[in-house]
Structure formats: structure tokens, C-alpha cells
Length: 118
Image 1: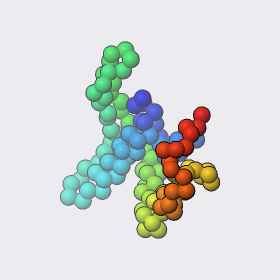
Image 2 (image 1 turned 90 degrees about the vertical axis):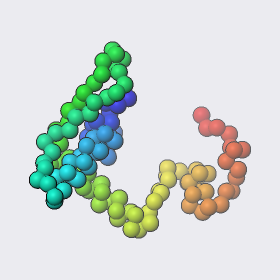
Image 3 (image 1 turned 45 degrees about the horizontal axis):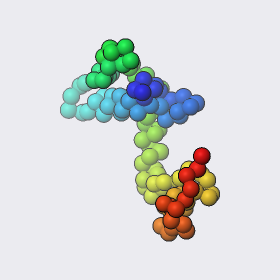
């Protein structure tokens, strides 16, 4: 479960995994902290739940300049969307009852009455 969250951006997950992004974000914060001359050289995650073989994993990430560029771009894109009040684009399906509700704040049909899609 956790290992995919350590991966950087890919075709399947263009934003990268949550843990990867967290590590890069913390590197950006620490490296830019002006009161100390600290530089992050790597990040380690110590997992507190054992894997299938009952081992506790420790995974080290070395963060590259490309990783920093990718996360900085995500931060800038997110900030632009916040400023534009673009908070939710939905799933993209025109007939999605939830997305239409969020966009219009008006229910055309009671969500609890919809049949579960298979």
C-alpha cells in the first residue's frame, strides 16, 4: 500500500505519490529556511506497520532537482487555482449527479435514490 506513495510522477500518477510529494515539499521548506543553513540531502520513511513478511521497512528517497521543479510547479498551479476560486472540476461526466450538485448546489434527484452503478 505505501510503496506506490513513494514514487515520483509517472504516466499513471502524474502528480507523484503522496509520500514522495511530502518529502520534496519538506526539502523545499528546510532548504529555504533562512534562519539556519540546513540542506536536505535525503529523506527516510520509517514505516510503523510491518509488511507482508512482518518486516518493518525503511525507505530512503534522494530528491533530485527535477523533483523540486515538479513540486514547485504543483504548488504554483494549486495557488493559481485557489486565487481563481477553481476548487473542484469534478469527474468529467456530464450526467454525474454529484458533480452537478456541487456546481449548482441544487439536487435534480435525491442521491440516496440512485441505483448503484456497476
